[in-house]
Image 1 (cartoon, helix red, strand yellow):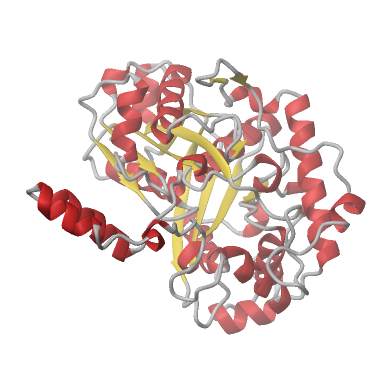
Image 2 (cartoon, one colour):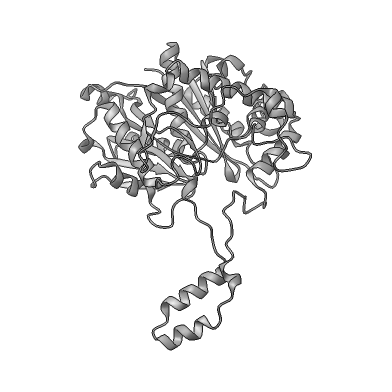
Length: 427
């Protein structure tokens, strides 16, 4: 096997992304994940029996069937003999699954694998207190009617008070939005800049759908109610800076983050097929592109902004790829919040920040806006936590092909102060 035998993506698919508790409200995460796995395999024209392993990401795994990779495989109709592993790296989960499958292929453990992920915010259930959990477990363990009645006499209606699901950092106690709002203040990103960025992302996503870009890899989903979902549901082609300016801040009264300049809670799934380039040629499969490099980073969230992790990973990803920022043809930055993208850009373009934080003599990048999220990002498309990395891989490779260009970079911030960066190349 040649030492230059690249790890390539031969196919992939994602479902349309939909606002939580809307069109996918009655679909389980495994059902959505199964569609992505099945359609990715079908689009590549690969015999499913050749698949050696599945890595799938999810952040909010269901209580039953928490190995969502395995449950999605069962729902996909692919051979049940394929080993399946679930990974949680928060919003970077399906980036990490791709890196994990690539590493297994490189090491010779497997030849062909599928990576991806799913999220169903619609399926997340309310939690109950530890006291309530203990109470109901004790009742279940009671062996006699008398014991059960004795336990029931201790019942209090307060035990039924649920703890509503939330997205908070256990370490800081702050929500992702609060952390992003504080990040905007630190990097001096204005509300007006955020709203303008969000509007442009909506317009780019709407234009990409109109010209048929997403038809290359977004597959229709039939819901249990018989509805066919063919497009991402949250894109607002008619939005404007004036409309967004009228929205109130969500996290702080004097904050800058609103429902309009943040990604919505979303359901959806994605999957991509990976193997060595020689294997793809042997099987006569179409090649979308190759993974040039991958890097992950983490910051101390008591000292650094929660979502700045990708800025620390970028220099290593570029170095491993053997390139400089100026060599890149497109950039795909996950848009958790407009504030987070714009703050990251501030950081990597700052000579002072790069010197103080990374020990570099020069800024990491000079970001060309015409190369950034050219088909829209997570703000209009949506952000199913476990699936966004797969979306970014597919979007980057299909855009490189459309432009007949060579190199793209993906940047994903994640909870816990994590960041993942991947460099992709056309083949």
